[in-house]
Image 1 (cartoon, rainbow, N blue to C red):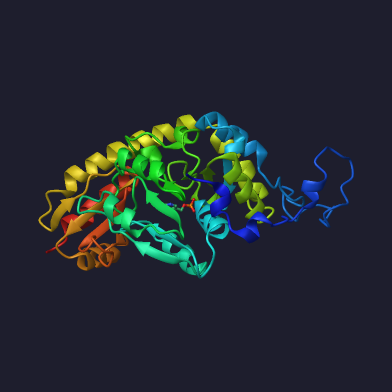
Image 2: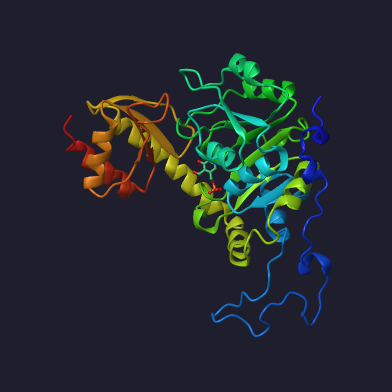
Length: 349
Ligand SMILES: Cc1ncc(COP(=O)(O)O)c(C=O)c1O
């Protein structure tokens, strides 16, 4: 049985978190002399001289309406990369615990593990980029704290079979992290609605992809109240800055625009696949549930260099296990995709 008390690090369980000025006085006052801010203002047109809301309540309230999840089940991070790091710092004892990743997948799980001195166990995806459940079951031991599943997966683009993820959630006594950074482009349902079903589920999402706010650095983790409380204890006091909170709030009120872009991106993705698949250097285009496609070519380095020469940058994934010969191409605007196709037309095998 999953029990949060069995997996939280002892030092975090006993941690007395930093109590900021904004934590200690929460009401409205006319004079604030409690946080050593500059009371005169900021040398800008807009004032940012006050520390922001440590828990970004207003943003969470708006997200809660969109996602159908109560604010108490939402953590906001400085990008979902911060949530990944906080998962390690909350649950994994350096030099002792381990986590499982399923390559090829998003690179930050490994980097965060290395930063936190946590052993990484790799159980590669199968040839069709799905979970090797037997391999994962064999890799789990009593010190395995986290399993990272990215769905839709970066860099392969496909969604992971839902029943397989459910099998892990039901049988693993640690935390299953489902990274849904690309969920808005997917035909699959989010796991967010399963939070009441599984106490060991953490779903990551972000405003960096479909929402078009990568520069603001706002990522989300959705989980049980107990897990969110731990994250809030561990995070830096003011991890979402004031301008990010204000701009994210304004953006979240414009979901119509985002949905319109998603439609355009999906239609452009179909269009790009149709146009790219007939080039003679293309061996395969993997089915995508994301805003990018993974393309297997006869020579990824050469394709990459050819495009760079034309001022077009894609991601060369040639050195990634199971992705030999592959490049990852983000779906751009109509004009950008046309520039890509024009350049590829002049590529000689
Ligand atoms: C699967 C996945 N998760 C998380 C992230 C990081 O997102 P954020 O910008 O919210 O830190 C990325 C970024 O590329 C990603 O591909």
